[in-house]
Amino acid sequence: MQSRLVVTVLQVEGLLEQSESRTLQPFVKILLMWAGSEAVEVEGFKDEEGEGLSPVLWTVLQEWRTRIVKGSCNPLFGDQFSCVLQEEKLHHINLRMEVRDFDKFSRNTVLGDVRVPLGQLNISYPLELQEDLKIPQKDLVGEVLLSLKFLPTSQRLEVGLLKVKTVLSEISPNAALYARISVQCNQFKLKYQKSSTVARCLVTVFNEVLLFSLPEVHLERCKILVSIYETRPTSKSAKQLIGQLSVGKEKRSEDEHWTLMMRSVRQPVAKWHGLLI
Image 1: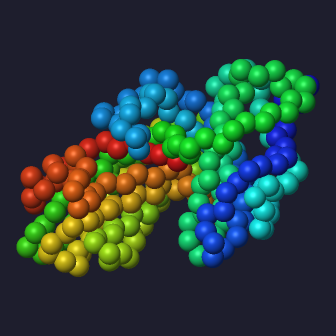
Image 2: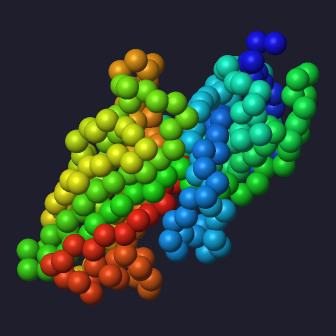
Image 3: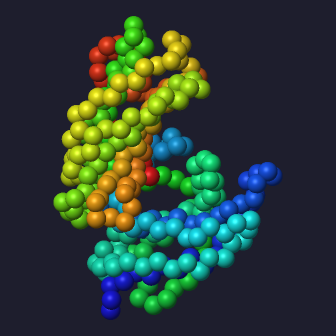
């Protein structure tokens, strides 16, 4: 009657301690995700296990977090969240719930996740679900056209942020995007750089180049991490992470884009990359 979705996180059972030096501090992060497109193709895009992903482009409608329960492998929550959701949208909606271990000094560890397709359930009445945690996976939320150029004489790396393609669930005149790009070479982390802020649309054009000075001549490892954020002046939070991508090389392997860049020294090489969350 009210077109309102209400989600209550009750309990998590059977978590395992990750370290003897510290106790678990679990919480649940909830993402309400909408399948905005069913025909998005990212050339050569694969998941972490090397398998091709279904060509669906998602967008995050809502993001919630429960409180943290310290020192428990079977935490009780009882946290409730709600939002307005039209019934005709239900068959395009997935509820993704991640159980995370909070760490104040580093990135929170994802212990596992559960995905609930709302369109396959009758949630007109209260429905209680108990699901096994699965190995966490990323979702495709966009594409980024990135260019790379290596200058060997000056030991510099040029990262060009050209375009960002996403799905919009609604048009907001105040929404804008910016990128935070960081580079880590061998064990040395360079200072991150931020792009300018550009008004968000289906294809947001940046055409901006950021320059990084590399510390060493011989690069065993190099990782470029691009994080795309949305800002809205009217929103409660100053920024929201849209998605991330990484490209680079390890000791015995390297991404195709990195290989193409090293073959075309002093020439920019552009390639589309999947944006994940």
